[in-house]
Length: 174
Image (cartoon, rainbow, N blue to C red):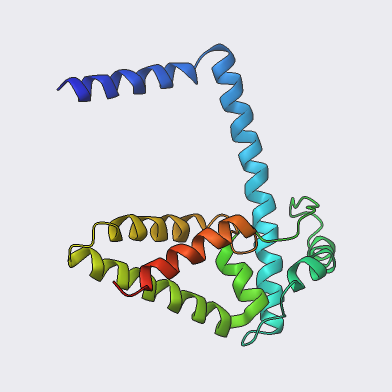
C-alpha cells in the first residue's frame, strides 16, 4: 500500500510538472524535437533499406552506408520533394539490424543474430542450471537487442566491445 501510494504520488507530481508552466513548455519542445528525430531516422532507415536492396545477400560492404548515404539520400529528396524530409548528415542509420543488413547483407545479419541467439539460449540454460551470473548476461543481451532497434552499437568501439564480451561470456563453457 505505501509503495503504491508513493508511486502514485510521484506519477501525479510528474504529470503536473509537464502540464504547467516551464514543464509544459519543456514537454512541448521535447515532443517537437522527437518528431524531427522520427522523420530523420525514417530517412536513415530508408537509405539503409535502399542500399540493402542493391546487394541483398552479401550487403554493400563495410563502411558503405557512410560513403553512399549522401547520394542515396539526395535521390530520395529529389524523388519526394513534398514529403517533408529533412536533409540529414549522418554516418549510420541508428538501427543496428538495418546497419548490419545493408553492410553485410542477409548472410551477415543472420550470422550476427545466430551468434546473439546462441548466446541468449546458452545464458538461459545456464540460468536454469543455477549459474548466478547468467541472468545478468541474459538481461544485458536483451537490453542490447532492444536498444538495437533504435540505435547502432556495433560500430561504437566501447559499446561493441561490451556487447561482444557479453555474448562471449554467455557462450563460455561453465
